[in-house]
Length: 100
Image 1 (tube, one colour):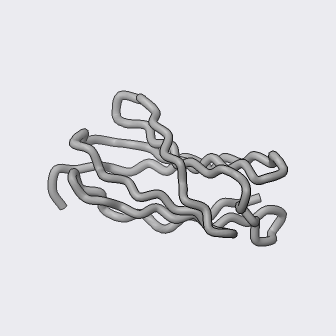
Image 2 (tube, helix red, strand yellow):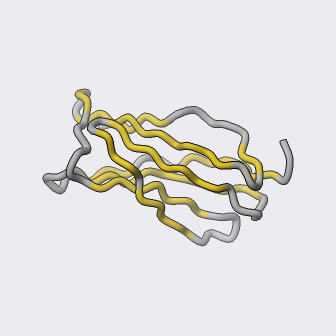
């Protein structure tokens, strides 16, 4: 099972970023329709916040307004399909800065 996300992009306070997920299960495209997908962020203090994704068949996306909290963050996807199969992606570390 693997979850593939878009690559790393510079994140700047005040910008709005679109995160996209294309998921495979057992090396086949994973239909997410009828399930739930969330993108979970952990801020520099370790406080986690979950954002529900918009699902379109085999893909999901989240728009995120980058908060005024510079530092090192992490994010990961949490996926539950319509039959209850659950997967979490590995966490991705990224930096939020005041300017590019």
